Image 1 (tube, rainbow, N blue to C red):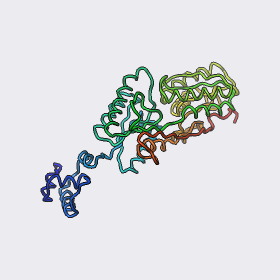
Image 2 (cartoon, helix red, strand yellow):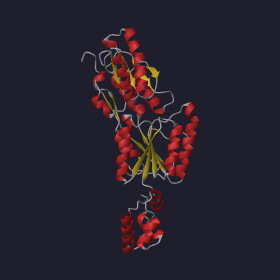
Image 3 (cartoon, rainbow, N blue to C red):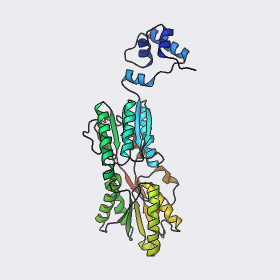
Length: 353
């Protein structure tokens, strides 16, 4: 069955197509209530479905928010997405989602697609990259976002500002104090741990990972301890698992006692989960054979055993604040900083407890 057209609605209501459009597409210039009611009844009787793009033009708003994440299957991003959705619902808007695996080129393509659909704002969640391999992609992403902002769009970014953006006009950043929180975690672990420390990090140049590594090393230095060894791997569960296999071999070869067992810091929780699974596959147990901590406090940790020490971030709140206009008094170029807290659990307790 063919869809009814605006012209058919106008003909049935006895008005011009322009008048019918003003009624059905939400224009501020609306005819009298009798005419408007006649148009709506005609539309209902024909089963007419308004054109979303036409409504956007009439209202100067599409009612859409674009959300770009690295991987929606990652609980970190799904929690942020819930916060974005909550803010969008409060603004009577809908969310369009793109997952990009952290590729600046794919992020640029997503921005272009959202801009073509006249999205009112765009939220980007996921670590920015300073890697040489991403230089061209960063430049193209920044140019696409700058063009979007010059045309009236607004952009919310979680963590770090967009690399290479020409101006902060139209942007706001939700800053996460990754370095300070990682330093606090290191100081607390150093107070009860006598063995060596090792960090499972993401690739060099991934800004979130780099901040957390730098902070953890600073916290160890504050406690008078030498720097931790750093293993660079994928910034996901698979990367954590691969690093965990390497550490399992190290633990087995060293024959370290429970008092001098290795303390592992994975720069996000899913990497810590992967590393723990790898250790378990080799017959090693947490916290008996090694201690481990993560970062983020993702929701799935509720079911993880042993309970994982981590840094708790208000992930849903971060998502809500990332939506332009969602925070109290938020301006287009505002910077919002969130707080987190160190949460020590069973995974870093002394082995005998």
